[in-house]
Image (cartoon, rainbow, N blue to C red; front, side, top):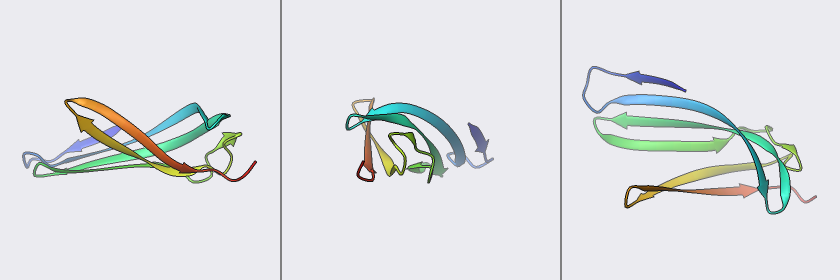
Length: 86
């Protein structure tokens, strides 16, 4: 993970890459996803995406995006994805 903070309060960025081993819809394998967070004077945006062609095992061809919702200070992640037919 890399971060950069500017001299302006509330403005910064981070980028990260993660490797995941998972079972999705009964199919096992791995994939990578990247995320980037930008804070511009306190306004925030966040991107999580599966790295194209990073799927392995039964997750070959996986694509998708992860969304994050914070409710009552608890992080909830949802992966919206597509997989080719087996």
